[in-house]
Each structure stands twice: as structure tokens, then as C-alpha cells.
Length: 456
Image (cartoon, rainbow, N blue to C red):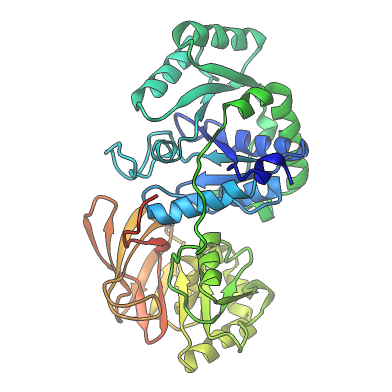
């Protein structure tokens, strides 16, 4: 146990952000995480906003679970408890931002607008910008200065220039920042390295479990970051956020039962750890099972949760896995709660058509037909209000969550809707999801209850 934990001081943290997506913040974050771990530093990671893919890569880099911190969708109690728990059990916290630093649910610029900047303002963690300098020189310094001065309570302390073409290019960038924004530090310049490109698909990066030679990739990224960045200066820039976790983990989704069977494999990978931790804290037991391995949920379980993921990539296997499908039917026959989110919702339907136009029969527990033959993007934060009482709570229970999928809904219903939803700005988006007795589902990934809690 290190001295920091002995005296009870929280871990220090910082945020790796960028002016835009594609600047290289994920690669920098992964390299930093692996390099710090290799130095013997107890490092944990976080991801700003709603994301399942990046945190899985973070976990592979550190060997420790990564957490999502969402200043729009989470109550202060929830966000503070998650961050406080991380800080109480680590030396360093590296948080990866989402999109551009100021991109969020709204343009309000307040502490809960969903942007990485909002998270920086709440936590007080300093921000290091990763700037793609591949097509600019002195202009990159102007970009950095503008970002640093835009929002007074967001502390941008310096930059990492990425995709630098040569030593001369690096010198121009460094001297430009020293002239234009001398208060900002250059923490390093990273040369162009196309070999570090991460494979992607329609929802973002390919999942960590599917990445070939991931361990070798992370080791190389850690060595590369260690060679080109000033790690000592980066650690000195970190700042602690003195928030202690409360004894009780916040309940994000009301427990579906006392013993909950949770699907977990490459087709059902999109589950926020804080959801399961909240259930465990409330006294529920969690049992994991793999539909792709044709495992049925335990008959001893009194509820079933099918998270999101990529069932469309495994639809043929799922349709052929009768032990899994029969297990769902047995549970439905005795009125056990079954809750499906996004991919899990599609599996509860009658059929799923893949990108090649092949239809695969699913569980048939909800009147739903979905298709990827023609893709349509559904993306954004959502406020979701329960239409009637059920496994998720009483009627008019309000949640915050997000929607991100490319499925086309061919048929949805007839049947009772699960939610009435609004976008982040309060615009009515109608009804969504289905509820048939104790079988419920929708495309919304629930992040937290909306009920206001005491603030830290």
C-alpha cells in the first residue's frame, strides 16, 4: 500500500481531450495507461460520456475496470460516488474525453451540458489537449490558445501534438506555442504512426476482445508514448478531487430481482459496470451467462438482463442456440422479469435481418422486427419516462440514457410502449420500446435515474 492511500488522500487525475474526434486521444490514453502500469503505478481510467468500446480497451491496458463519468446523464451523487471510489483505490486517474472538448448535449456551457469540459469543471481535473498537427503548424498553437481561454473554469494546462511529420515540424509547433500561448506546456510531440490505427466498425472501434494481438499493440503503444512524452511532467500536472465515495453505491436501475442473470459475451458486451455494482450494493446476486455459447439463464435466477452489443454480427448463431432461446421462453412462461436494451431488445423480438438481407428468428417474446439491410443512425441523449409500472419501477419513473444504433425498425408492436422519451433539449420524441407482461425492452441504454439527489 502506498503512502497516498495510507494518509487517505485521493488519487490525482487528468483528462485527455481534443479539439475534435479523430485527433488521437484514444491512442494517447491507451499508451499512457499501459506505460504508467508498466512503471508500477496503480492507475485507473475513466471515459467521459456514454461509451462501451473505449472503456474495454482501457481495462485491457490497465487490468482494472474502467468507469464512465457522464455530467449530463448522471446525478451528482452518482458521478461523485463513482469518481470518489476510483480516487480512493488508485494512485493516478486518466480520463479520456469524448468528441471535442466542448461538444456535449447542448450549447449551454454549464456544468451539466454533457461535454468533457463540463466534467473537467466538476472534477477540477486539468485537461491536456491532443492536437492533430498533420496539416498545420503555427495554427495549432492558436487552436490550443482558443480552447484554453474559452471557458474560465476549465483548466487546459498544455498540449500533445500528434501526427508530427518531422523534427523540424515539431520544433515549429513547440516554438509557436511558446510564443502564442506561453502559459501552456508542450507535453510531447508524437510522430506519425499509421501502425497504431485501431480497426473500427459502424458503432466505433472494434471491441477489445476482437482485436488481434491486443496485448502486443498496448505494449508498443506504451513504449511509444513513454519515448515521446514527458511522463514526469504529465504526472505533476495531475490534480486530486477530494470527494469520498459514500458507503452505498447509487442505484442506477432498480434491481430486476434478487438473483439476476446477465448476458455477457461479444454479442452482449454493452453493460455499464455501475449498473451491476448498484444492483450488488442493493443486495442482488449477479450471474453471468453467454448466449453465444448456447448457455441458458439459470433457472434459479428470478430476472434476466440482456444488455446491448452486436447481435446483428452473430444473428445466425443466436437463432440456432435453442438452449438460450428456450431458457428465455421458460422464464417468460413463469413471468420472470426480462429486460433487453438495444441489442438485447432486438433479440427479444421476432426476427433480426442482417446486413446481407438474411432474416434470423429471435426469441419471439416481443412483437418487434429489426433490420440492418438498410441502416439508419439513431444517436443522442434521451430522457425516458416509464409509461406504466413494471420491473423498472413505478409509472412515470424517469431515467436518463442514450441511444446509438443503426437498426431499422420494420415493425414495433402492436403492444404497450415502455417509455415516452425526449431528447436532451426536452423535445418530445414520442413513445418507444415495448412491454408485454414482465418482458420489456427498448433501444435506450439507461445510464441513471433522473431523480435529484443531494449534491456533493
